[in-house]
Every structure is written in C-alpha cells, then in structure tokens.
Length: 450
Image (spheres, rainbow, N blue to C red):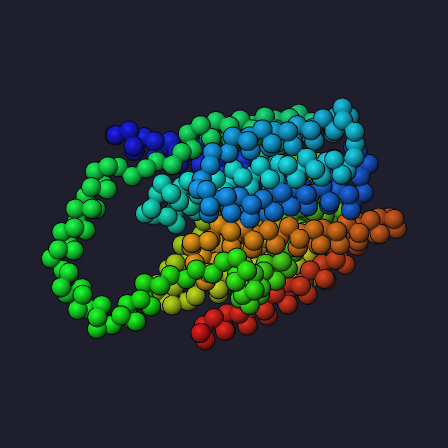
C-alpha cells in the first residue's frame, strides 16, 4: 500500500470521525426538560435555546459553503475549540457556576451549532476533492453519520450518565472537541498521483493527434449542438435567489423542516406531558424514554439519509422517476406524523410511530434536497446554493418552536395534562405541511413538463 492510499484512507476516516459528532444539536430534547426545570426556564425560553443550535448549524452552512466554493476545504481546528466552549459553558450554567440566562444558553448552543456546520462542511468538501468515484457512497457515509451522532450520545447518556446532565454535558464538550481536533490533523486534500497525471496527458496527446481530423469535421457540422451538450448548468448568486424554482423549494423546505424540527426539539416535552397523564406505575423514568426516542429518531434519520440516494438513483435509472418525487415523499412522511399526533397518539406507546415517521422523513429531506439543488442549479456554486437552502430550516424551526412554546405555556397555566398541552399547534403544522405538499406537486409537474 503506497503513501497516497494511506493518506486517502486516513483522511476519509478522519472525515467520518468528525461527522460522527456534528449532529449533536438533535440531542437537545434528551436534556431540555431537565435544563428547564433546573434553571426555571419557560417553554418559550427553552425552545429559543433549542432553536439557537439549529440557527448555528443552518446559518453556518452558507458561510462555510461559500468558503468551500472559493477557498477549498480547510481543516476545522477552530471548530474543536468552539464546540467545546459551547457545551462546556452550558454545563457550567446548569451546575450554577455561570449566570443562568436563557439568552447566554442560547448563545452557547449557537456556538456548538456553528462548529458542527464547520466540521461537517469541511469534511464533505475534502471527501469530494479526494474521492472522485463512488461519490454517492463516499459523501453519503459522513452525512449519515452526522445524523447518527444523536443516537450514539443518547445511548451513552442512558448507560453511563442516566440523569446526571452536568457530567453528561461535560463529556459532550470534551468528546466532541477531541474528535474534531484529532480528525482535523488527518483531514487533508490528497493531490492525484504524478503517474496518473502523466498517463492522462499522454492519452490526451495520442488521441488528439489521431482523431483531430474527425473531431474537427464533427464540430464544424454541429457546433451549436456540441456547445449545448457541453454547457453545464451554473445558476448562483442573485440569479439563484430570484429563480422561481429555488423560491418554491425554499418555501416547502421552510414548512417541512419547521414541522419536523418542532417535534425533534420538543419530543421530550411531549413525553413529559403524556407521562403525567399515564396511569401505569411500571413506566421507566422519563429520561430513559426521552433517550429512547432520541436514539430511534437518530437511527431512522440515518437510515433515511442512506437509503433515499440509492433508491432515487435506481428509480431514475429504471423507471425514469425524477428526484423531486422523493422530495414530496419526504414531506408526506412528516405530514403523516402530524396527523398521527392529532388523531392517533394519546399515550406513550403510540408516540413511537411518530418518532419513526419524523426520523425517516427528516433523513430523506436532508439527503435528497442537496442532490436536487446540484442537479437543478449546477455544481459550480453548489456550496453557496445549498448553504442558502440549508439555512431555511433555522427560520422554520424558530417559528414552529415558538408556536409550540407559546401554546404549551398557555395550557400549563391551566394545569393541562396529556395531549391537551400541545395538540393545538399540530393543527397549524399539519396545514403547513399540506400546503407544502401542494406546492411541491406543482413544482414536480412544471419541472417534468419542461
């Protein structure tokens, strides 16, 4: 095994290591209720803290996407320090060593989210530069691992820390910082081998000398056709912002992701509400149920991210089904989850199916959308374009989380129990998802017509 292969292997493993700790914002619901009780935060305040992590991730993506497009991949050493500071300060606040301000806690989570975005974007860019074949698998692995990180940490929390959130947050700070720092040493762009470059040049020279006459005749006969074939789609900047397809994609992403994030960030609160109305005395502790749902959510999100790319490839190749169909399908999963909460879930046993649906739908959404962006608008400015679309969920999540928090606070004043504490807001999220499905169907029709 030569030195270049060793460097490629180590760089890819480093990308996987970094990605495996870049999805910890989805872990928030595992300790959100305890954090609220310990620091006496309202539902709106705790939802603001949860949304801040999403803001860090999603607003960081266009920034680091732009950097990746214009300056190439960079090793994210700084991200290790930032994510450590974010979780460490949150742990100190939880223990009472720092001022218990919900705005400061939101800032700490924002830092952790920004560091996660930097680590994941750097990993993806360097993997894309190093591995030019089997790109679907090579890029799908780190994306899927980022979705799996919440499952990994929720299991660690259940097995080792149980309900000791202070030491768990300290562990989260140290382990995420170390993984990104260690991975950054080996995450490098490996240039192509000299022999490979020489072979390509030789082949090109040989082909050009033997086929120049034929090629010249061909180009002279069909110059416009040849130029049209070779022309690559390149829509970005203001053209992308003003593009009607991009606008419709952003609107649907706003509602789909907002409804999904509302459940992801508040499943711990929903469990607490259903737990208080449950008559059985054999239920496990709340923190175990919360960790279980975080684990299942993360697992099915990972499966959704891994499967949808392969399935959409096969469907397109064998049945000519466009990828936009699977974007609609991901929204249908999330829409069905909203309906289940409204008309089916009335105890903890039935909540599990909602967690599975949200996990699959959210995983599908975050895997198929960047592929659609690259195909509709080109790859030259993919980092910036996907970064702009990827920041939309921060605003959708904030809106829906604020609605959930306001609704929950209002009902708790009346000493609500069970589904009465949260069900009203899901009428709104169901209508929003249905509207997005209709918009997606119209977009699907117009794109196919073109």
